Image (cartoon, rainbow, N blue to C red; front, side, top):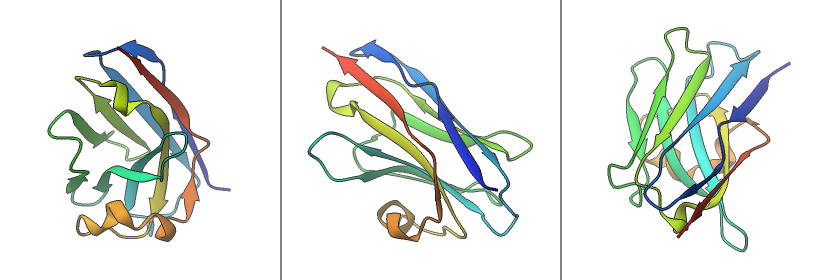
Length: 127
C-alpha cells in the first residue's frame, strides 16, 4: 500500500522559513518523480516544485524565485521542501505527490498525471 505523509506545516511570519517533509512508503522504483503542490482557498492547485528521483533534476514554479528548494534523502524515501522568505501569498495547503516520470517543467502543470497524493500539511504565513 502506497502512503505519502506530509509534515512540517506551521504558522510563521513573513520572512520566516519552514521545511516540509514527505515520507513515502510502498512506492516502487517505477515512480521516479515526486512533486509538491499547493492549493489556497478559492484558488486552483499549482505546482510548487518537482524532483526526478534518479537524476535529481529539479523544477520550480515561477513564483518560487529562488526561495524554495526541493531535495530528497539518501535513501530516496523522503522528499523535502525547504521554504525561505515566506510571504502571505504562500499560505496554502501543501501536498506531495508521486508520478512515474518527470523530465521537464511540464511536471509542475501535470497534476492529473500524479498517481498518489498525501493528505496535505497547512502552511500559514502572517504579515
